[in-house]
Image 1 (cartoon, rainbow, N blue to C red):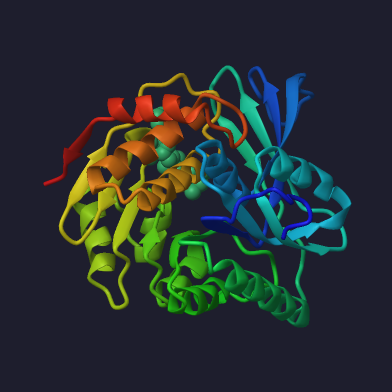
Image 2: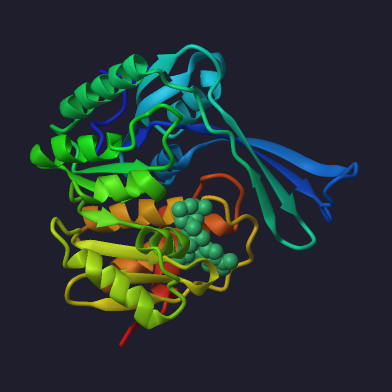
Length: 327
Ligand SMILES: Nc1ncnc2c1ncn2[C@@H]1O[C@H](COP(=O)(O)OP(=O)(O)OP(=O)(O)O)[C@@H](O)[C@H]1O
Ligand SMILES: [Mg+2]
């Protein structure tokens, strides 16, 4: 039983937060570098991609757990979120602070400037120790859990193949992995065959080392992954304001974005990842998956922080999402 959430249901999904963060959002009207800017408002949200995904899942009524690491010195904010959203906390506590990422939101241009910290530096022994503890917890959780979400960057010193190791060990035990990362960890993890991946356009272009600026180029890149060995079953490429591309070996669909009033684009991809997992748990078709995942993102765009409105509202948004086949 989890001591922080004694009444929590067994988790259906566990997200792995190897490099969580607190997101400090500061709103400025007309941000100018190199001068004194008067900020309008500041908000601190518990964040990091894996925590964002768990938070959105929980808002939708999916029982989620988080495994990974937290800095002891500012863990209270995470614990408060986990308790409030009934997210089971299976994190290892490390000395020091969890990193703080700053987002400067310009309320005039609508642009967000991110200042991201790298996270704690891991010596080889500490990295191996954390990986072992995470694997042990995932093994225990695998009894109830259907999906594991691996998302976000790795802290310095963590081996780039750490996601690959987790995928190999957990998928062998019958759990499915959704992977959302970039760069070297993405490349290494693909070799272990995650079941579903959600790169954005930039992350996919970086992986293929070529620009992907047409539908044909995007679909071709996705198809290459779907016919690789090992291959994911689903590839979802998010395209920011252009929506997202949903690919299986048989189908290619474009989910158009919903015309919502954007408050913050931070974590739109994480909300989409949560929607993808919720859709998989419900065994939805590819078109319904595209609609639900897009609705999760749209619902999140209207607010700061990794939060969704009530499930009925998200489902109503999903019905409005237009999905068209891509030739
Ligand atoms: N400006 C926007 N207007 C409408 N919808 C948007 C906008 N930005 C994002 N979205 C929606 O959110 C989804 C995911 O966004 P995006 O492609 O930016 O993810 P991402 O790059 O992985 O983001 P992050 O990793 O920062 O969470 C898109 O597929 C789209 O449906
Ligand atoms: Mg992303």
